[in-house]
Image (cartoon, rainbow, N blue to C red; front, side, top):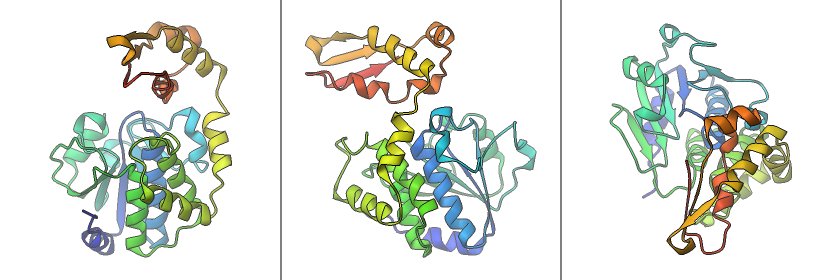
Length: 266
């Protein structure tokens, strides 16, 4: 069932200050959704802050050129988080919020969740969820449309990165005609897919490359090749100089082995 965004529009209309947050080790879907929604709310004259438990990972820092994403404890202290509305994006699980979980729990703000994952905790929030959606970014695009905000190139770019990455660059089973319709709209709004692809996949650090080499060399299979798995250990991170976020997307390379049905990265 399509989401009824009318309650969301009413919440936005009735309030003036917002904090947006997402999960630990944020990916492009998390950050892109936050940035796009923040821009849309600001276009309506709202005061908006993006606040996460973790910083934007270096390999996707291009998505936040204005360094709009703040980090709890580094840029903002918990006691200073006092919005009228607190919006959680791309998760509805307490365990994934890290230090932001206590902020959300203790806040007297009206709470909203926008998410596409099946798992869900009770956050005492107004929930806008579609588990059949391929990315939270597409839900945010629908929310922006409901608010009547024009999709500018600045809004379109992070949303395209959100949708493209959460679909494995449009190759996962979650991709539908709606995915391509949304992507087409974003390109029409000024997105250059080749630029985003280059920023995502052609700007690796040598440390990230070395870490992924270790992960690939440690690959093993079970169940006649239907299951494939590998590991990334603290020693691997220390010796290559890579970060934990440098493991992102490597599990999808394991899925590229013929006959594999399930891939795991420990």
